[in-house]
Image (cartoon, rainbow, N blue to C red; front, side, top):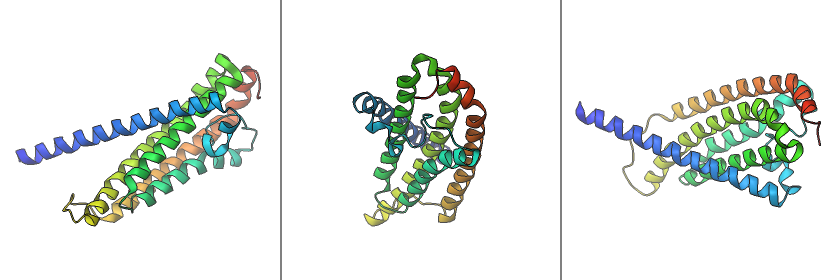
Length: 207
């Protein structure tokens, strides 16, 4: 019994350290995005880098806002899911989180360059809720990727590794993450549709 409790405590500590590592990667990407925007403001404006997190071009109808909110993060979720099936998926999960952090840094920096401190409501009410929720979902996805990829790596290296659960639970977790992302994208698109005109008009309009 005490051995089981000790094993659970050790596993919990490992998960916490892992999430801390992932948060540091996000922070590093965030700082990188800020530097890229300061040095290359035009190139950093690419949709491939800001991942639709920037509010610079929200003049879309509601369906367009939804897909703009959903598709970039869904692509990263799908990437994490596929990386978990590789023995080298751990490195890929780190790159996904770094890429998301860069997008966050670019989105916030572009808001500041466009509106200055008057753009703070845009960041707080339009960018922060969606980017926070979707980044948390990516953190969970990266953890699942790391866990399954470690099992494949142990198998390739002929190590006993950790006794894993059935693979179907992996698919179920990513299915749940996708459902949560759908809800987050729906909420973000509705919020953007209702508030963008007021907040951006108050912040001096769009550049």
